[in-house]
Each structure stands twice: as structure tokens, then as C-alpha cells.
Amino acid sequence: MQDKKVRDVYNAYFHFNNERTLSTDLASELFSVESEGCSVFVDKTRKYDNQIIIHELSSIETLESYLSFYTRDLPPEISVEPQAITNELTTWLLNRAFVSEYEHEFLELKPDEYVACTDKSQQVSVEQWLHDNVDDFLALLKTSGLECSNEIWQKKRPLYCTERFRCYVAKINGEPCAWATSYIEGEYVILANAYTQESYRSKGCQIALLRARIEDAISLGAKVVLTDVMPNSTSSRNCKSVGFRHVGVRSVWCKNKDSHC
Image (cartoon, rainbow, N blue to C red; front, side, top):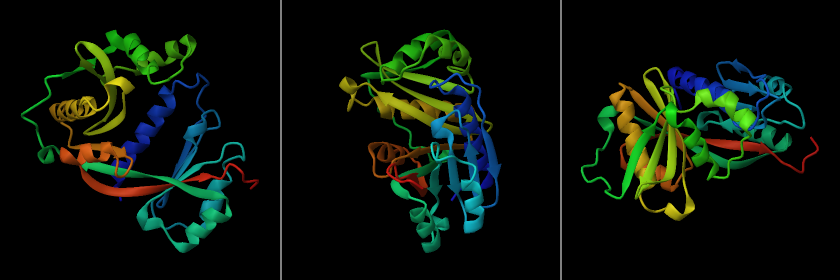
């Protein structure tokens, strides 16, 4: 589904997210394993950073050995790419009390595939906020329900609104009402998180932020822009309308909460 270069970019982004998370200031204990068929991430200090990504056909014995890295209290989320799905793998997942919960669609865009817009919204303006605005960016993040103590923020704020992790803000009538981020890794750019305040939805904020990030990535010399979305979502449709192409879909399996396995 993805070539090795793209996998390496997503792996670098995973490690960066592990570092920048605002949910804890505990020192990371992340370790990862890369094999032909799987990417494995383990960190007992961060609930959501325990993952197994199955890229290719893998033996059940190998998967059992990876599963032994985790505890009952912190089971992994297991993502399966289409070419890795077999009846044997599905049976193994079900027997280990994993259930298929949702899917992630992966998209890619090359600069010459971008569908530029000549009729941009006059209602929505977009700014890239630099590090001088980092504390204001946290205040905007908190409008999405984020909770972050001052102690954690002081440790993590150097990672936000930087050249590597770029932060963009949409405004309507001068008021910040939506935000989005991009992660730069060499000649690749990942369009990362995005959020619009509820009262400003359906006003064009996300498509404006999408275009601003793509155009910024192209200006930086990016060869490929990457993102992942929920299939058949507004985000997926927005991305495809500006030139993103479908790469593949991962099915995501999570441990059944009622399981005693």
C-alpha cells in the first residue's frame, strides 16, 4: 500500500507525536520494531501509542511474539492493510478478542496533481502562526476540548508552531475559529490534525486550511503531500476535490473491552 519511504515518514511522525503529546509529561518509553511485514510500537507511558501495523502477510507465530510485548491493561491497536488480510489473520484477531472498529483511508498528492482554486473564499482567511503565537495556539486548541496543564505545556511548547510542525489558523471576521497542522519530513509533508469550532462549521474553514497547507508544502519544495482520513467523510471528499488520490484503506482492530483475554 505504501512504499518504504512513505512508511519511514509516517514512522518519524509517530515518534514526533509521541514526543509532543499534551496528555502527559512522563518521559517516553517508546520502542519500535520494523520488519518486512509489520511496524510495531510499544510505550507503556502513552495509552494510544501501542500499535501494530500489519503491512504484509505475516506468520501467526510472529504476530504472537509481537503481541507478547503488551499488557492486558495496555493492549495494542492493530491496523491491517488490504494485502495482509487473510481468513487465518481474521480468525486470529477474533480469537484474541480484537474487533474491527473503524478504517483509515490514506491519500497522496504530488504538486503537479494539485487542483488550484482561482475563486478563493473572501470570508475565510488563513494565517500560519509562528512560535511567537504558540501560547495563543494552545488557547485555540483548548476550544476543541483539549486539557493541558501549564507544567506539561512548558515542556512541550518548543515543539509547536515551528518550521517542522507548522500550525495554521483560519479566521472569519478576524476571529480565530479553526486550526490545522502540517508535519515536515524532508521532501514529504503530512497534513495532520484539523479542527473547526462548532459554530463556524460548514463555512469553508477546512477547505481553506487544506489549500493553505498544500500550497505551503509546494512552496517548500515537497515532492509528496500525505494525509489520512475517515473513508467517505467530508475530509476525504475535500482532499480528493483538490487532487489527492486514494492509496489504500487500513482496517483498525481494537481489543474488546469486555474481553478477559
